[in-house]
Image 1 (cartoon, rainbow, N blue to C red):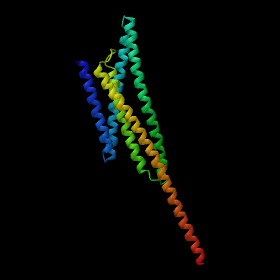
Image 2: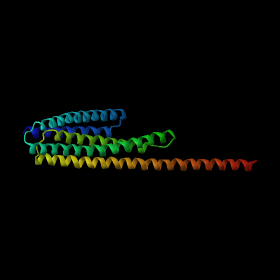
Image 3: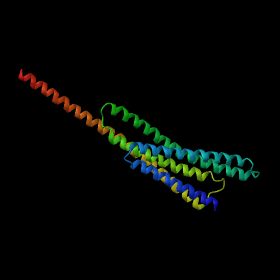
Image 4: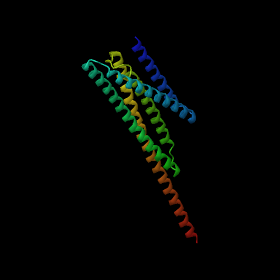
Length: 213
């Protein structure tokens, strides 16, 4: 009963933090949005730190297991769970690195007078999706750290949902970043075309002035 209660608390926490992240994206106040995202990040980091400590404690307890077969099975479960978390973390990290590169390009192009409004909006969407994905991963890590026992069907079902949601969020973040890149390319083209028209008009005016002479 206690195990299922812990699962319920974790899932409620995941839903609550995810909702906060969505509100951060929808907020019209950018400072509030950044503040809320920072709160979400701190909560996720706290959960991951706590669950890492629990997993480390589980590993230590395995060493006290006298039955070698049971110890090996428990160790295999812990290793499998850690690898699953590592795969998720790696996927989020790849998207975070891409987001940073896109943001760097936005900064450079904005300084050159390119309209980056659309690209910025897509990056905000990607940021929110990645924070939501981190929340799902944190929830999964909390479940993994409950014990070294085999997970029950209900908990496995919850984990499948968290896994699917995480994968979807990473894909959506990737799409938002692709859209940001496309938006930048389109904005660059618009600026180049505008500058070309301005130059053409200026050259025409100069020619007209020359004819008047």
